[in-house]
Image 1: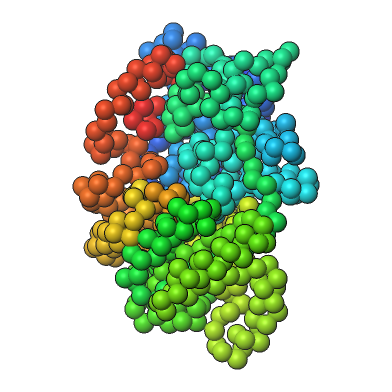
Image 2: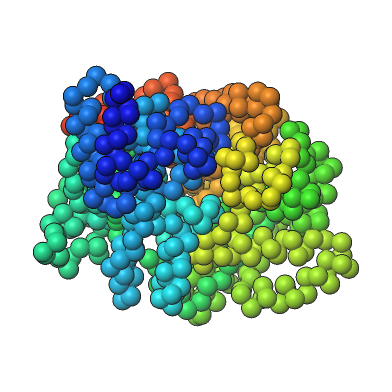
Amino acid sequence: MSKKMELVNKIEAIVGKPNVLTNGDMFDEFSTSTMKEQTHPCAVIIPNDKSDVFQIVKLFNDVNSQSDEKFQLHPISSGKNWGYTCSEAGSDNAFLLYLANLNSITEYDDTLGTVRIGAGVTQKQLYDFLREKGLKFWMDATGSSVDCSVLGNSLERGFGHTPAGNHFEFISDLDVVLGNGKAISTGFRQFSDESKRFASEGIYKWGVGPYVDGMFSQSTLGIVTEATLKLIAAPECYLPFFISTKKDTNINILVDRIRELRERQVIKSCVHITNLDKSLQAALDESDWPLSKLSLSDEDRKGHAKVYMLNEWTASGALYGSNDEVEVWKKKIKRTFANGEFKVQFISEAKFKWLKRIAPKVSQLSGLKVDKTLDKLNSLMKLKRGEPTNDFLKSVHYKLTKLPPDKDFTKLERNKVGLIWLAPTAPATGKNAERLVSIVSEVLEKFDVESAISMTVLTSTAIECVISLLYDRRSDSSDHHAESCHSSLVRRLIESGYLTYRLNSLQHRDYDKYYSSTLIESIREIKHTLDPNSVIASGRYGL
């Protein structure tokens, strides 16, 4: 019997035979990607609980310490890290450790707004839990799937829409299984055990002593099984806003003014800014999709922009506070953009309901697709009140030449969606935003790829720009073309001084080619100490 099969048998003894997959629909889904596949898993392991995770890591540690042939565990919380790594492992000898069953939601404090979540807790599960509790506190949601892991996204330093949009900032007190088989906790939780819990736990992110939580974010030093999440109190008033301009050169002014509003705490939420190409991908009904590898013609682009009422740049955010506070901030935003080149709209829930009532008649009389635009607006407003939605998954299918016959837009791998995210970080100034747009547009034009760009003013100092490379993986040489485009763009961005805040599979693979780090050798030494037998997911973030 091969060493691989011996290992599979031992794993089955821990989790049960049905929880070790070597074929079937789930295995096939986790064996594919939204870009050129680099690796294929040996099996998918589905632990029942944290105890199983601990035993599995100890098993792999023992096996690897006794043999030259090394097997690895690649933990995935939901497997829906689309556009970055999906569920792709870092090596061919990897077993995927699917943490979906670690989905407990415990220790909810309805006074302080904290809750304990497992790695498998999805956005939908947490939202449904908070709704059952009366939505006294809100979560923050990303625009990805409702089935994405809350903790997984936080550990990848993802971001959302509300004042709690900078996700890693809002988790603490991690439970971690190290590659050497030891289990640890961070923050004040390190002092707790089954017989004694400290009241200090879960309320102060930094704990005491060296702060180590960051070592388990975007790393392979351990498997995080659980963490405490800080929620935000439901505001007395929540008011979404939209700021748009018809001049593509106004991105400079738009970013500078939004940064100033964030600095002064007028705007406390993340602010998302999209260009027209990105707005078209999100807003267009599939009946208007090009269904072609070719980019939209200028005529079609202008025509769609008109009927869907889209602009060259659109910023969206929301105000959160008391009625009096929101009224003051609303006036301040209006004054800030009162030069005639920007349109500012505030759309309350009541106003939205009124717009929905009149939309069919207005659409009929004007020839504009008011109803379709309002549907997308509703999806965006959900995110700004912490309600996850699958509605934006449809947009990444935009470049398919043929739509899925069952119109199921949640199965990106099956639908052969080509998607690569690239996420450069820049100072939150108009000058840098303008420069990013110029670089991205120049490179993508050479590859005949639409410059679909979104920027998020994440803090008063940082912009996270997300560039979406969309394509149909069924088209000949499409993976190669997209990879070439990606490589050219990465090189140009690095040469221009912009690093990405998060890496995709292609960047992981070529880490040493792209990046020269003064830190990575020291982190590799820590990796060797905490994971001496290379159990956990080598090949990620230079590790």
